Length: 237
Image 1 (cartoon, rainbow, N blue to C red):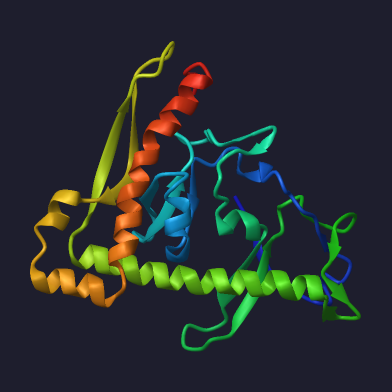
Image 2 (image 1 turned 180 degrees about the vertical axis):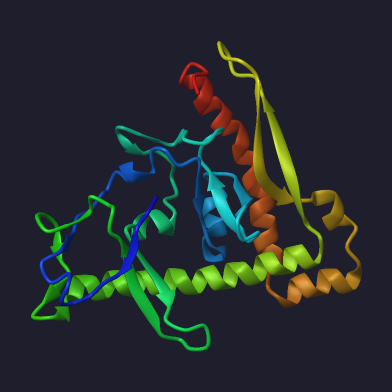
C-alpha cells in the first residue's frame, strides 16, 4: 500500500529524490496506468487494456505487463525491458492532485513509502524553503500527467456511453505449468464498434478519439509477445 502525502517545504526540507533508471519498483506490477497521450507510443510495445477499480467502479487505462497479479514480464533485475516506459513510472514517486475540483491548482505529492524519497541520497527538493529547479521540473511533469489522466477519463466515459468496453478472459496454457485464466481486465468490443451508427461514429471523431481507439485495438497485437516472454521464462508464473 502506498502512502501519498503532500510535499511540504518545511517538513521535507532535508528530503531528496533518488533516481531509479531501471524502474525496479515496477517488478511486481502486472498492469501499469497509461494515459491517452501515451497510447500511440505504448501500443507498439505492450497491450493496452482497461482495469476497473472494485471500490469505485472507475476504469483506468493500463498497459498489461504480466499475465497474473504480481508478475511483470518486461521488468527484471536488469531493469525495464520494453521499448516504451509509461509516464507513471517515469514520474514515480511523485504525483499531482487537484487542490479543489473546481480550480486548476495542483498539490504535488509523494509516495512516502518509496525508498527513492529519503534524506540521504538523490536530488534535493527544497533549498531555503523554496522548491529547487529539479523539483519544479519534476512537479511540472507530474501536473502534465494529472491533466492527461482527466483527458483519459473523458475518453473512457465516451467508450462507456457507447457501450464499447467489454470484459475479457484470456485462457493460458504455459509450458510446464498448469493452465489458468487471466481475468479482471476489459477491452474495446470490436464487434460493437463495427455496429455504431453514423451519429455515434461522429461523436468519436468529434472527440478526436478515432486514432486513440485504433491505437488501443492495435496494441492487442502485442499480446503474443507477452506470451513469448512467459515461455522464455520456462512457463513459470
